[in-house]
View 1 (cartoon, rainbow, N blue to C red):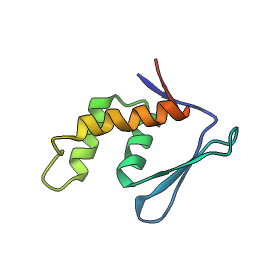
View 2: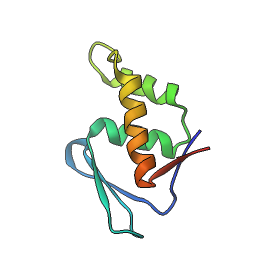
View 3: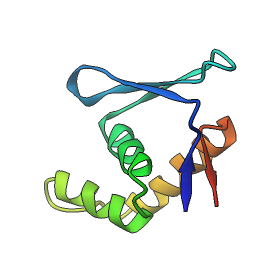
Amino acid sequence: MIKVNPSIVVREELEGWGVIFDPDTGDSFGLNAVGVLIWKGLEAGKSKEDILKDIGEQCEGGLPAQAADDFDAFIAQLTEKGYVSAE
């Protein structure tokens, strides 16, 4: 299970974009609409499979073939920055 760092602040901007902000370090990280969808899923405690299902429902033509790999790469970035952790 992937757990969101509780000290992280996320602000959703116009057109589905967002910004992750770490008040402890002052670092920020931009999110596109899919990143925001993933973040919301993580905050809700959803599994990778459930989040990918949510993404597929939002995509015309269904879930892209590379979505699972992209998800893993995105989670690796968030983990490296300390925004999430795997439990």
